[in-house]
Image: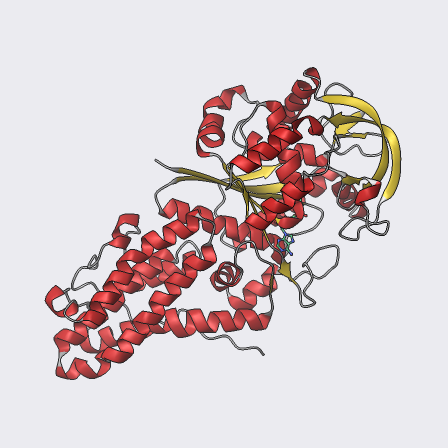
Amino acid sequence: MSRFYVTTPLYYVNDKPHLGTAYSTVTADVLARYHRLFGNETLFLTGVDEHGQKIQQAAEKRGKSPQEHCDELSETFKNVWRDFDIQYDIFFRTTSGFHVTAVQKALQELFDKGDIYANTYEGWYCVSEEIFYTEKELVDGKTPTGKEVVRISEKNYFFRMSKYQTRLVEYINTHPDFIRPENRKNEVLGFLRQPLADLCISRPKSRLSWGVEIPFDHDYVTYVWFDALLNYATGVGLYQPARTDEFHKWWHEAGANHLIGKDILITHAVYWTTMLLAMGVPLPKTIFAHGWVLNRDNEKMSKSKGSVMDPKEMIGFAGVDALRYFFVREIHLGNDAPISHELIMNRINNDLANNLGNLLSRTTTLIDKFFGGMTPAFQPQVAGADPMSRELIDHATSLASKVKSLIEDFQPSLALENIVELLNETNRFLESKAPWKTAKTDPATAGQHLYMAVEILRITGTLLSPVMPAKCRELLKTIGVKSLAWESLSQWAVTAGQTSIAKAPPLFPRIELT
Ligand code: ME8
């Protein structure tokens, strides 16, 4: 059996989720739900990044202890993911005891083998990104993304990242699907053309106490990225003897697929991978960096700019399934894309109200009116008699395998485009066959054309269910479909004759800007 392991970044709990963080989580959820539909054993990990200066400061601001603050915020994240119908298997918190112990084991092991050493750090530090910068990396005295930096000089511990640079470059060059899309791979290779500095992985407790204590020096805590990145592996059992089999199954056999935003490409493709090389643990299968959801000024929607859209408000406007659909269909995975009420409205009205919703409502209305609400039985000699029908049936039965290979290739927007194209073709087919007219003169043929529409609604409704779980459940219930078996999607005439079809209320009412 195939297995699929997908992760999102662990979001900082310095604030509640916004539409940008929702985008990553929805995309990972859609991929996970597709793989479950394919019959793959699937594991979906998401969660929160709870240590570090940013969180300590956020807690102080709210007058809470860091732990209290994290407990509250992680509940907020869970609630928002519930609103988005996210079906994760693991909600990871970096304050979990098992993780803290495993991080300390990793630190001790790397210290014992000489890959972590003490030195004095002299340089620039960005509090909001929690990243050290060299002089060369600064742009006009700020980080490349324009954040403030402060000068720092202190004893710290360093991870010998430079030692693994050559091996990493070699690995990237020999594994073309490791860092995706291609432009991000090139960005990482470009970054690796300069000599890598070693990575400062500690913070003195005098400056920051909220973190995982360094096991070989109790005056220090671990750099938040060193702690957080390990989650992907500790979440499935790394450095936990009782979970060895689980770790083997998900990390070694399935391999992890890290879906991240392009803002955290280097931390994943360079820090995390060299950490794994040093620990002698296999690298993930894929690191896929998606683009940014942009605000109305075409800038990255971000908490620090205060330009975020509130998920609840957007769900209220579009409906959760339609919003999930918008994310996946409108944004080609890897590209940046603007988001606005108008774009959402246009996409939903075109693809869902006028197309899918229209096909469902005209099909069920006609079956109700002319066939007493029962599907006619399939008659191949009638339905397959003309080339247009045969072509439509061919397209319908080959759609599932097309969708599967596009999803496996991280191209969900193209998968949806293919599904919508079949719905368009079916609406055109009905317009040309006009069963609302022929029902009176040639009911047998009209019945077969409507039967074809029902079959296509079964196939497309199932293929859209990972994107719009609740709406598709409703759709499939309306046309009497009980099972979502993957194999049935490449088969024709699965719907039995005399299946009772309910007259559907509009599944996706058109939305208007008020
Ligand atoms: O970086 N468009 O957490 P974070 C698309 N804790 N995606 C966006 C986005 C936008 N406008 N804004 C945020 C961290 N994201 C670390 C990660 S991983 C071990 C540690 C998404 O709360 C995107 O996935 O700043 C981005 O990478 C992530 O949120 C950053 O979340």
